[in-house]
Length: 113
Length: 110
Image 1 (cartoon, rainbow over the protein chains, first blue to last red):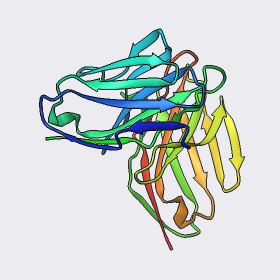
Image 2: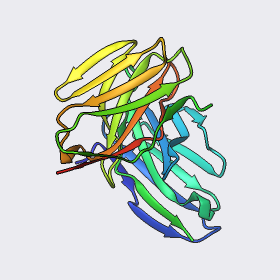
Image 3: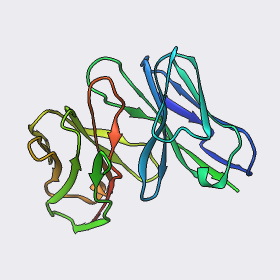
Image 4: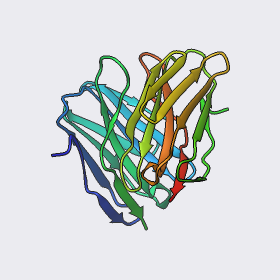
């Protein structure tokens, strides 16, 4: 089984809808991250969490919220989706000790109509 | 100026060529430098990791960091079609999250 899983893998939604992307990990890592990837813009950090009680905004947090339900689970919500949130979303984890090697999930492809 | 700059390419080379991928960064406090590889429709995976200046070699791959010029390089020798992917440089300083370059798309033709 994959160490970092994301659900759903693909999602089509309409403008104004609330959606949630979920991430689970079995690596036992404390740190979890949400990124979006857009052509020509690379990976941009949305939110990150260094432990269950620690949530931090990243470069592009506007329009997004997160919930760290447990060490293994980190969810990303779009409260009212808009078309420019159409992107590929990645969850990642890393160990709190040592280098910032990050382990990425397979991604969620989101289309907002 | 963005903290990490990377030419997005695309870069196309024939099989067997030597490939050079490069990034520059602006913050001299950055200490750790990484290269991630991302195949189409997959998440990025760590390829190489170096601390401070110097070279690190792993098979056909060599990562090089020059802190005096704030320059990060990845060299691929004897490139193969299976090396076709997007390569992202990344860096950070202790206590912060990773900062990624935009990625360079490489295509190796047989």
